[in-house]
Amino acid sequence: MADSKEQRLLEVLEKMQGQISALETEGLKQDLQQLRDEIKGISTGLGAPAGASKAGDAAYRGKIEQLSSEVRDDNPYSRLMALKSMGIVKNYENIRKYSIIIVGMGGIGSVAGEMLTRCGIGKLLLFDYDTVEIANMNRLFFRPEQAGMSKTDAAAQTLQAINPDVEFESYCHNITTTENFDNFLDRIQHGGLGGGPVDLVLSCVDNFAARMAINSACNELQTVWMESGVSEDAMSGHIQWLVPGRLACFRCLPPLVTTSGFDEKKLKRENVCAASLPTTMGVVAGGLGQKALK
Image 1: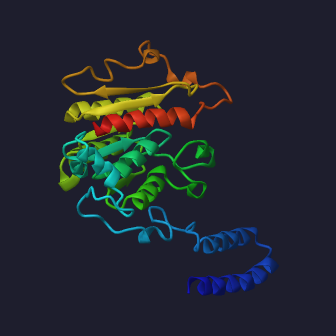
Image 2 (image 1 turned 180 degrees about the vertical axis):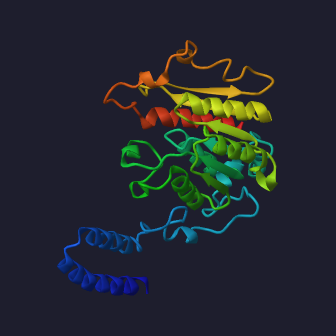
Image 3 (image 1 turned 90 degrees about the vertical axis):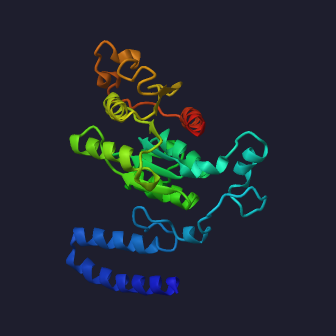
């Protein structure tokens, strides 16, 4: 049915293209080609709107009301619930009660989000102001057909398809602006399951200003958070656990390069972007996800 509809639309487009070609209007030709590409993408899901699952994702499975340790080919939680059966975790099913904010859906945040989604976390709230680019394809997670989408919508699309049991909120926001910072505060306070506060904030950003914004918000609301990052040359990374009121805050223990008031923008070399290795980012993301589960 879909194939015949697609064929009819393509036939109409062929006729329109012949008429438009005579007008020699370049803008119309480009619009027509874009429409043609979107129609051809119907069968493969490439024309799906932001935040929507690709064709076939809905048929993957329905929501699972209760986690089970029963060993079956169609039980995505059997190997996770084995942790409980082995006595490693007392109540693994409680993971569905927790909500986590991830700020920065780049090479670390997107992978950490996928790990938590596959583990069955209750809810993820995703923050990032950037869009997916082909230049991001050296990293894990994002796909070429998602280029142009906001990173948060692309991530929510992929993660929802992986585990439909998890709830997602997507915010294409720069949290360092006043308006977006207020919304960030609100989601920390009320973005958890049932409208309560979230349980943890993960910082996966690549700039000092955003880290300071997260530090301010979490200090104000007494929210535990973890800071993470990868070095400019992609050879090392770090994870920092911050507990307001118990451990030194990020302002008190910032990276050494910032303590002298050095402008981090000067770290970037002319015509040279920061290096990015999926291996290093994957290791940091794995460590971050593991600590979040603990």
